[in-house]
Amino acid sequence: MYAKEKNYLAIDDYERSVIINSLNNLRNKLIADGRYTDAVNELIIKFAHAPIKKFKIKMTEV
Image (cartoon, rainbow, N blue to C red):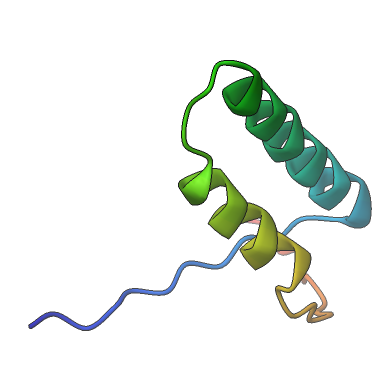
């Protein structure tokens, strides 16, 4: 059995709200089409409850 790989995204508050709104629009479209929304619901929950960590980015010249 394989260990689950975790992926991290660095996004700001605006980008986070765009992602959640887009997923919600997709969910509404799936409901209107009579299709299952389970996967989209899980993603909305994951993004809405994802922990927020602040970090600094150091710029270096190459």
